[in-house]
Length: 129
Image (cartoon, rainbow, N blue to C red; front, side):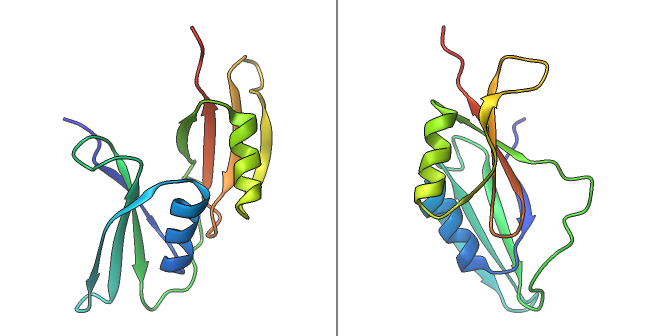
């Protein structure tokens, strides 16, 4: 067994695709419209779905925004350098909500950015041997 994808609902599909591809450097892997259900699914990721877990962005055509609720946490992405990753996000027009630095009560370097719908993405700096 393996994790295939995590689905998040987005209010503006193209804006979200642009964020995940242009700001975070993922690729649009596939996209499909479902007119009968009035929604579109787009899958984005760093590698093919056969190799790794990806994100499913679901856009319900009649819904412009969602209440994120208090149960959802974040998506975590490993990066070589969290400080540099934050700079790249800023340069590409993204929003950094927690600057890179050691996590509280630990030594792991982390940072948080936010996608256009308010979902949190955590950068976790790869540990060096």
